[in-house]
Length: 138
Image 1 (tube, helix red, strand yellow):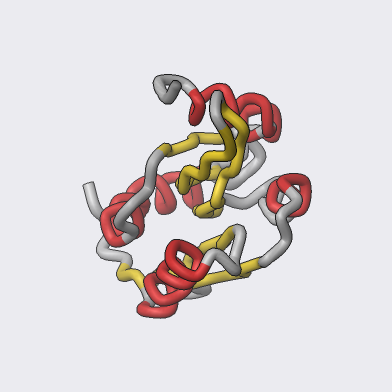
Image 2 (cartoon, rainbow, N blue to C red):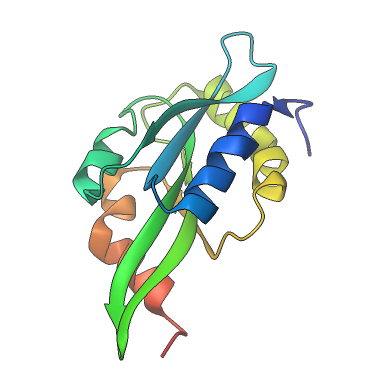
């Protein structure tokens, strides 16, 4: 099911910068005020996972991409993770709109390795995500 929400071109450009340039560490996306398109809310070069999680609002859904870096076996690895953040405290209407609009953005972002669903901060905690992204890669 699609909500008819479009993806602003800046989302794709910012994502390409993160993916290819390795300058950005994460991007947070939100629906525009009129709920017609997905926009970049924030992009950051901060390597702190705590900064990233701190940019997820406690009572409003968001999408995000985080360049997740971790140590595994012979060295550092990176995986681009897509986050569908839909906190329990968010309004039902907002959660439904974000859920039905997710695929438009998700399909536009080529090269995502993992998808993380989060309804509270424990589900997007570093160790939870590390466990998920490192599974299956030796």
